[in-house]
View 1 (cartoon, helix red, strand yellow):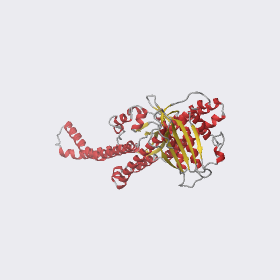
View 2 (spheres, rainbow, N blue to C red; view 1 turned 30 degrees about the horizontal axis):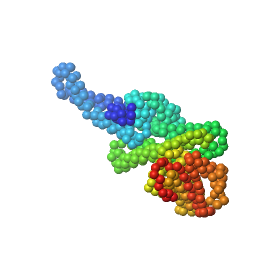
View 3 (cartoon, rainbow, N blue to C red; view 1 turned 180 degrees about the vertical axis):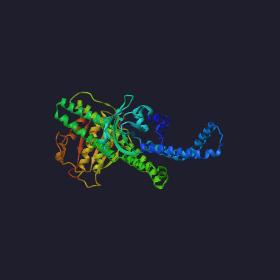
View 4 (cartoon, one colour; view 1 turned 90 degrees about the horizontal axis):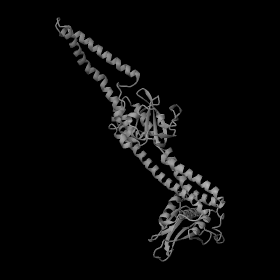
Length: 496
C-alpha cells in the first residue's frame, strides 16, 4: 500500500479514530457520565410520578398509566441528556480528530501513537504505507512487531534519536531513525514515535564502507606502496567532499524541527478542555499559522537532504571507480575507454573540489571557448587528474591574501589534442623544483606527500597524453597543462 492509498482508506484515517463515548475517556469521567444519566432519569421520573396522578383519571387502567409514564419519562429526559452529554461528546470527538489531523497534515515522517501496553492506537498515512497493511489491521498490534529494536518508553531520553529497522508486512525493510515523546491525553498516558526513513543515507554509507573495504583489499593484493598511496590520495580528495556532505546531513538532523511537533502536541493537551475556544482565539490563529510554517520548514529540510544525498551518491560512485582503476595502476592492461565530453568532466571535477575551494575563499574562472571538447578516454582517470590539479592549485593560493586567490581553468581543441590548463596566482614554483615536481614523494609543502602530481602525470601518460608545468618563480603562480588525444574530427587551430 502506498501513501496515497493509505490516505484514501475509508476516506482517510479520521474515520477509524476512536470516538469517545463520554466527554472524557478516563474511568473517573466515565463514572461521572453514569451518575449524570442516573440522576437525570431519577429526577425526571420523580417529576412524572408527582404530575401523572393529576393528568389521568383515578380509574385509568394500569397498562395505560405505565405507557404514559414511559412516554413522559423518555420525552422529558431527552433534552437534559442531550445538553449534558451529546454536546461535550461532540466537542471531545472534534478535539480528538483535530489533534491527530494536525499530525497527518503537517509532517511527512511516520507517526505511531502507542498506549501503555505498547499497542498502536493511531498512525498517520506515512506509517500505514510503510507497514503495508490496512489501517484496521495495523491498529491494536504491538509496535515492536514493526520496529526492531524498539526502545521502551522508560529508557527514552528527551529528543534522543534511535536507529532501527522498520519491517513491512510485504517483506520490505527500511532503515529508520525515531524519537519518542510522552503526552497525557484524556487522563491517560501515550507515547508518540516519530519515525524518519534514512534508507538512502544508510545505503550510501554502506556503499562507502564497501568501497573502502574493496580499496584496502585491492591495495593488499597489489603489494605496491606506490599504488596504495596514490589511490588513497585520490580517494582522499573525494572523501573531503563526502565528509562535507555527511557533516551537512548530521547538522540538518541535529537542528531538525521535528521535536517542535511534540511541543505542539503538548500545547494542544494544555487546551484539551477548551480546544475549540483556543483555536478560535488570536493565540490559536497564531498557532495554526505556526504549524503551516513548520510544515514548510520540514518540507524544505527534506528536499535539502534529498539533494545532499544525490551529491553523496555521486561522490561514492567516483570512489568506486577509483578503486576499480587500481588494476590499471597495478599493471593490468586495458581500461575504460569511451567517448565523453571534456567540459562535463571539468565541471564534475569542480563540483567535487567545491567544498575545499569555498573553504579557502578561492575564486574559479572558466574559459572553455565555443568548441566541443570530445574525448575517447577513461573519464574517471581524467577526473582524477583534474581534481588533483585543482587541489594542488587551491593549496598554492593559501599564502595569498583573502580576496586575491584565483584559479583559472581553460580548455580548447589544439589540432588532434584537447588541451586543459589549470592556473593559479599562488606561491609559484622555484626553477630548480620544476624538473622534480612530478617525482614520487617530492613536495614543497610541509603537509604534502608528493603523491598527487606524480599519480596525475602517470595517469596522463597511460591515457596517451602529457602533463606539463610552468612557473615564473616564487610568488608568480603556476600553470599545469594537460594534453589528451581528441576524438576524431576536423582539427582546429590551437587557442591556448
